[in-house]
Each structure stands twice: as structure tokens, then as C-alpha cells.
Image (cartoon, rainbow, N blue to C red; front, side, top):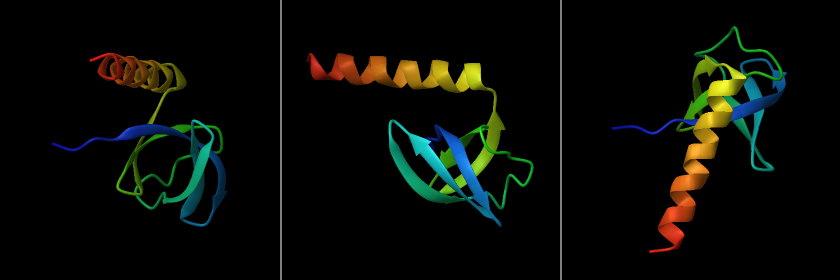
Length: 75
């Protein structure tokens, strides 16, 4: 099983982008998603954007991750 995290693309330079999640930015490869544009959300897996997703889906996924994390903090 693999886990891909939604991140927002904040800049693009060639086949790399700067992506942001929760205030943390990192360089990622967009070689597999050449259609991505600044402001899009992508699914990030091991440093590679593997798909473009819509903003609503990305935000709901991130909300669910936060909910899971808060539940694990209470046990």
C-alpha cells in the first residue's frame, strides 16, 4: 500500500515544483504531471506528484488526516 498526500503547488520551474502543506515547502518532481499549474493540488508520493486533484477533494483529504491524527493523540 502506498500513501499519497495532497499538496498545493506554489511555483514551477521546469519539471520541478515547490509544493506546500501546512506551511512546509519542498521541491517535488512534476515529471509525471506535466499539466499541473501553480495553485493546483497534486497527490505527492515519495517526492513525485502522481496526479492532479481538485481543491475540494484535497481539502477534505487533509481534514480527514487531521481528524485521524487528533484521534491518535487521545489514545
